[in-house]
Image (cartoon, rainbow, N blue to C red; front, side, top):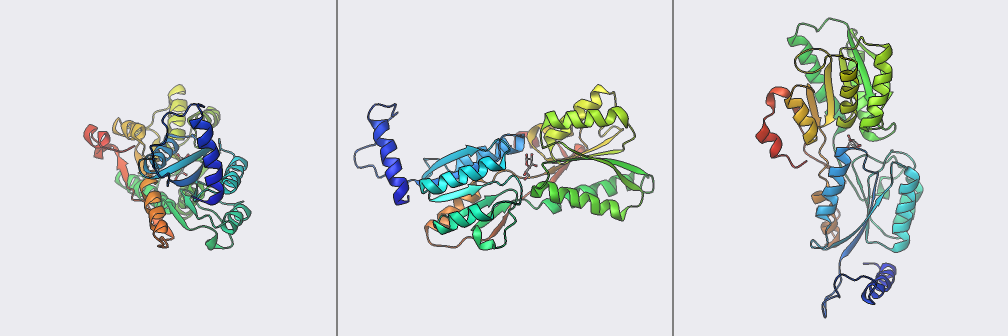
Length: 331
Ligand code: GZL
């Protein structure tokens, strides 16, 4: 724990122990050597994000030797910048940042570096001139996720004899400028370049939420019903789009109609996929907590951690899924 934070922490502790609600006085002689971690999280926009936060909270618990300070930025980069600067002023030991977009982090990361506070980036990436401004990144291979989706679609169309038919694709994007959106979009658009019979009829921004996904898809489908594939860059937007198609009596899913492709593969999406409402769930593993803890312990022992740390992930189709498989999933 940094000297500065020790003073603040000691003051906070005195206030608590003076009857301001301390739930338990420190045991006699108990050393408080918790590792203090400031975590700037984007928000709680999706099931994926909630699972990501829970994973960090579980791994960086007091029982595991940490004091976690969690800040929810409510989808605003400005709030993340403020949170990181507050963590720096508090003199935390480590900062974990889940950046909402790739740009705009150079100066705040330089400030953290000047104070000698290691920063671990999770999930989406940061675009900086000097990769030394952060210690490590943990996350998914978003381009691979897109390639998994496109390869599955190519196979699906071939198996159904539609490989040469005109295919209209409605593309529902996540928050523009975040790595997940950039890579999942690029993977689809590159495939459209390769297939002259594939057309992206529209790109709608659903901000990764069910409400916005429903709103933009309903508005679009009211005017344009001629779509063959719905490519949704996360489950929550897919649920919003499904709500819109239900409202407009548009058939979709494994039994026919619009082919639905979704990313994240949270339990609720897997249940919809098993029910045939989503054709393909491409997994994006949110369980970054254990790896964050592992890298911090390495640094505590003076070991420089690996710079890039990918999480494991796969994909699921209707016929692959069972109640048991879904029940055993961590999120
Ligand atoms: C992906 C992550 C995305 C998820 C969404 O790693 O950045 O943000 O796909 C979440 O569900 O909102």
